[in-house]
Length: 324
Image 1 (cartoon, helix red, strand yellow):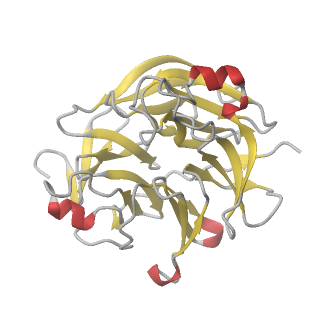
Image 2 (cartoon, helix red, strand yellow; image 1 turned 90 degrees about the vertical axis):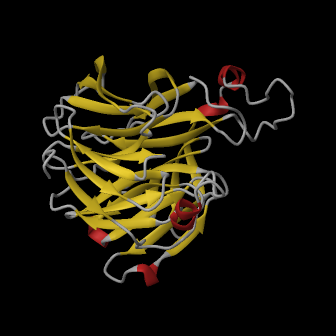
């Protein structure tokens, strides 16, 4: 560690799934359960960490789910909240059934704005060009999730929006003109929110008002040069450091509160998507290699979940609150 950077190397997967676009890992301590999504294949996976890989199960959701969160006092014990293809929904973790709380694209003005029917007119209304990607729940139980262009429908533009679902089921547009909203989190003082825009290579910091949910004073907290890769999902530890998955970079990097790289985890595949803490271990999702002929080794290890002990605990996740 002569350069001040602590390093780890992971060579084999914890879960050998060979999935599409694995994302959104979320740990539920009460059940010692890790879940994560496959956006490309419209699946949600669950694993009992006490039992290990043999306990892995999967449900199909029919449409892409970008991110999930636990629900306080859920109506059903198997219910979680998700940001899915068309908006915010609850998910039955046993059946995969989605029940929409708020469909973002129901407004005709939104349908026009986001081009559910492309200029060619060949895209059906059931396939809007947007989908939800990543997000997180804040300390007051509000669910923040970002939408982006669905690359199965159109190319990525700056039409992405960060939405906030409040406990009373109202939805607020918080940040617009993003490319791909991604990793989201808050510091331990709860006065700063971090938000990633992946193609731009930036993690922004905002002043955060926990009482109102308002954000202001955007500035660049960390920038990753595109030649290295793009910042994807992230997890925060108890020292207010951010562990950032690097898309196309075969790594997770740790940055301190000043935005300096102080740690690096090397993985055997290029498309690293998101880490999640379980105690002092990081569970890391990855995606299938986009250029398998050019990167055969990366292709062999892509679309799996990896595990590494980094010796520091993660900042606990928040749960969504439905207002009764």
